[in-house]
Length: 337
Ligand code: WQD
Image (cartoon, rainbow, N blue to C red; front, side):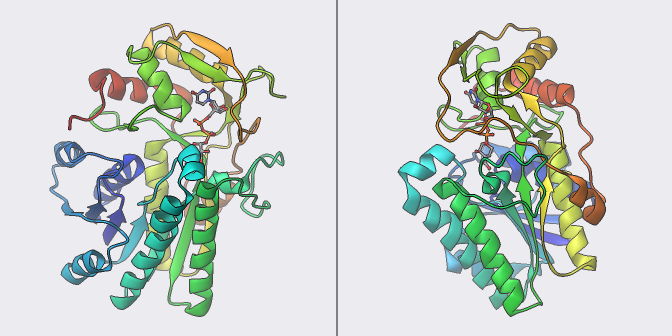
């Protein structure tokens, strides 16, 4: 199949591009480099040996979308392109609604104009809010507590309405838990611009000496060691889940929402210990106050993905940490400009 990847040079998009090539599919990347760098294209070519079609463009640009969809016959699209920082979304809601929601509508309208109606949507477990009914199942109540989470839930509902209005649309919304890790080559990985908001990239930057210490946001949660518990999933497992989803749409049309997680909860202290063990470097930490908006624990019930997609996560915490460390130690300052 030929698949259009919006946000294809981003962290999850680039790893999914490799998984699609490995599965024998063809890939077109579409990205505005707002949260990624051109160097990713060279790295992808080095890893896959394939020069993928690439369009530097914005997903809100209808003319650019028509240009791409005119040039190739696509079997579907995986829509990653959207801003994804919770804190930033609170400060800049219009940026999130413009690019996250209006961008999704622009893509869907362009796909409709070109009779391409299979879409896998990059959603997030953030739509579950701070539910403590764990493990989280897809029919758990949604509770969005920030603009970023609202853009994810709104786009899921837009896609559900679209499928309802025209059953020719086939949609799977994938709710990611906490993506971490990197391709084992060490050539691509997570490269957040500015100060990382997420734990693993911050930890990796402490390990390579870019940051003096890790602030642990609270150790007084009702969890085994008092620190926050999350369902960390290797980005390659996540990428393979997207391949399974886009292939599933070819055989089983419809609309569905599916968790991509491991089903295991890991605490901040457990992650720090794993990192120190694998990287062989001490990680200075300092416990500070809780971060507003954080809940104590979140992990997936991943059984629906196994049942519907025949997919389960296979990579464990040590592999996640070893792959992050290889990426970060080979690229201490991330991708070159
Ligand atoms: C994990 C744990 C923190 C940083 C967020 C988004 C979610 C998704 C994934 C996009 C928590 C603790 C963190 C630090 C810390 N993103 N922590 N020190 O908050 O579960 O999810 O990223 O889809 O939408 O909400 O991930 O990595 O930020 O935090 O102690 O410097 O690490 O308190 O317990 P989170 P995270």
